[in-house]
Image (cartoon, rainbow, N blue to C red; front, side, top):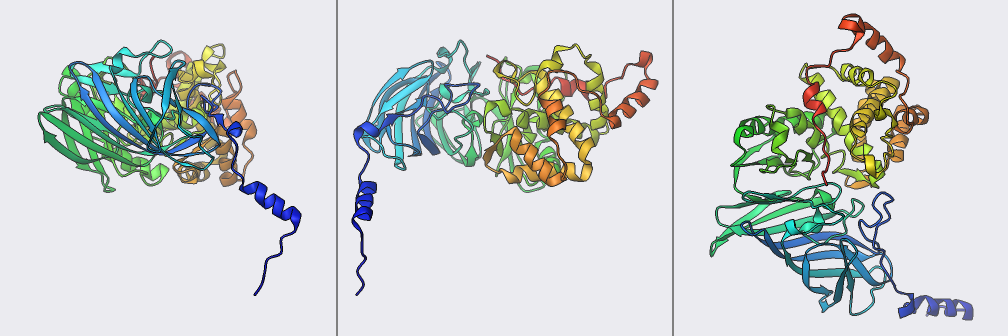
Length: 501
């Protein structure tokens, strides 16, 4: 028989490590996750793994009632913690026990559990709530779109507050089950796959599931009367599209665009790698807003995106985000170039695919059409600041940076980077710096100076030699030396995936 010998000092250390933290050691979780652009967004002290939302919505009055169950784990010793939320809360339970709660700030729900929560504790958080989303504002705006036959939650960088309590920042991704009861004859559209539809006592319940990690702003809900189409992409992904029945003159153009979702996704997979989720689609509610948004697996499109006719370019943009923005999400909102520069460049590649102007020709046009004293060049795509986060420069100058990178490292390395990057950080988060390091590793070239010039300097960069030659040749054949826009430019220029407060 062997007996372990423990010396007195070791015994003291062992006993000390086994003693739980005292109540004085527990602190409130931070009311923000630490994003410098939006200090109050997200929360500290825990990590959510799954949201289960069971909702009931009445379109005629815009009344939403629900119960949210969050599965999470504490990441520090907590005396209390926050959720981001705006509706009226009637009950909160933490690990089965009733918890006290109060609203604070613009959009904070402070929760104090019955007992302190040690680091590493599994959490179940149940929140019962109700309210009229369209009546709630934070910072002077709403992200809930009221429509003639219902309502829609879709906005960036915040949308969740108006319909479910959350840790609202891309750093805390989770899976989702969203079950919504609506009056018979009305549909509820959300992310992922439709698991079931059941009807009773005048209400129909739709159960949706997103089985891959998803940022909170990418979760969406649309209630209204829709025409639904179903198909399958060549890669075998089920497609569900939804069109409001009252789109008027925009109806045909919207369908002519979004019904190409499978084709576009299959084409993008050739550049970015396999489509990363198990569902595809898009929806067009009758909203008055003008933007589109990359809500995961099922992008939101405003009817105004199709006011001038079909617009497949916007479909390319939002589907490109499924890789750049959804599969790999920003680590902080200053990294927005990782989303928008790449989605814009995908539009340029699609233009080339369709024979409506090469990526180089579009880059030439964008570069030449903005004089050096244009404020466009003062916006830094790599860190634009919250006031310019969705500025046109983040899109267009951001795409110019990619064309400059392509010219620098050559097509073979460039397209290897485009395809490899989403796999490198799949279902996670990354920064602009992470991208630079990855591109340098794949290309074998130092890229700090080039990316600094195009992403961080508040002035117009000099045209690379390869582009100078192209500009000179094209200018010879144009009136007055001006460069004519490629055929696809109007559609591309009109496509900004931005939020409107």
